[in-house]
Image 1: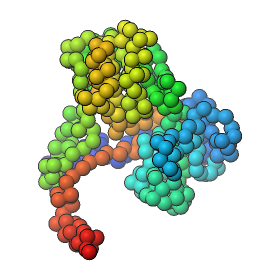
Image 2: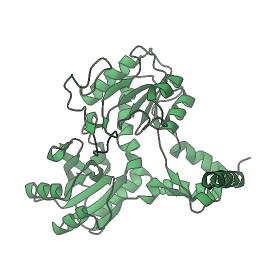
Image 3: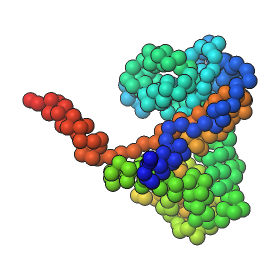
Image 4: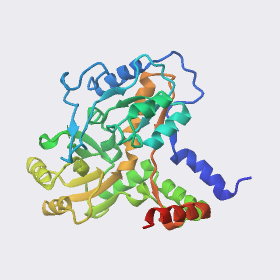
Length: 364
């Protein structure tokens, strides 16, 4: 018999941990699909922005093949939208849609029998594969790997929809900077105030249920200091008040390189703007973007955080794959991130193990 807390944890885990199926697991697959079919589906979804494994990304022109670099020697990564690794004639068993590949994702895929991973974010040897070559790791589980990212950006208006407005203009390289995404739009009729946006996000993203699950998890493990990424980064008003009116919106994503000078130029070109929504990544109250928004007399609201992109971009992608490849099980691989002080992590045995190994590591 499960205790009340255990039963609640098990029930809510089905909602928040690990895997979400976008098609019924009992649905018979009517035809056999191969990886080539997934590539064709991605061609449709991205409107031809992806590439096949036989195309040389440095010879075949494709503006979505972009190298991202912070000028740290050896750390640049080139985005290759499409099938990055795999065999076109391999049979598709299950598809996993994920934001960012890491070793946990690979092990989850292996355990589930997923043999196609469609990642939103670009990936590279070692970085996303537990420090080893991707081919060595992925061949263990027969994984075929796709990525999308810039090729997927701007293909649907869902992020704006979730935040309560209709997109009127999209830039995925504002200021000539690849990946610098910006939306302009007009609030929906029922989005009248900043408070309406907060309430809409709370309702759609199930913030209260997430808080309840975290409370149950803390109680179950006896870890009062357990924290979770989404719960720590809730939507928040930085400039304005819940009753401030909203009509014309600029939506920015500062981790993509959007700067105060960009905001000033957009405002000069669109002087009717009244609200900045900043989401996926966020800024602190004293950030230069907030200061510029205050100078321009704009509202400033923090929306959904990055861990929720599995819903914002992953859900549309997963649903599209389900429609284009009927009968193939498509799973969303959620990456819920938690933190606990080292002194409280694990049980007594693991604490003793940690102390013993630390003594070896710190011995002089």
